[in-house]
Image (cartoon, rainbow, N blue to C red; front, side):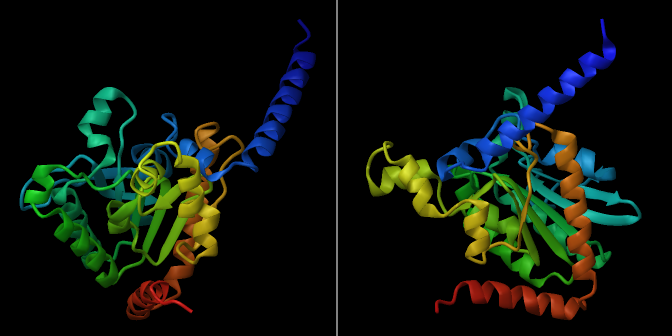
Length: 290
């Protein structure tokens, strides 16, 4: 076996594969991006926590009702900088998906997030949130425990805390369940993630009373990262490796790590009082029409 020749062929193959991925993934429509955002092998919150941060210490419970495993939270660090990390976790196997309720948080999950936001403010820790949810849990028990109030209170907490907040939409950013963790100084979206008030399936069933119009709904919702950037909803699109984040996961972790550090450096040059003012102004301006 000619080892040198074999290595050369493998390198050529990998380059051709990368070029093919780049060609295909640069021409995706909105519905195709929805499918990629939901890809079962796409990295989840726990994957980013374990690979981007060191010395993660989990923190649990809302101190009022209980623990909600749909939201994973705790402290970790990148280099010498410590962070408070809060994120939706969907799970990757049937067992873990059930454990994490498919990433759909209940009121105790959002109240846990609020508790840790205020804890981060107390200890001067920047907050990183990872958003990946189809939406807040719509079950009867969640409504009984105050789902809408808990989401509203989470948004309020995000707007008030005097510490930098960076939110990263890594997969699905669905409705108020996503906004509760994505009200931040800097909102970043992975290139093939989505952010929307409703799923294309839900939109199609409501507007057309049929599931046949999901692609048209996806286009109309303007849910892609490029759409959200153009509309001023987010601050930055994080480039994904060719073929999507699930193809070359270690490379994607490095890209996200670099983006976090770059954006934190920018926010660190702004006083905390000004940070809160800018954050509130940002969301007030989004609601205004020209």
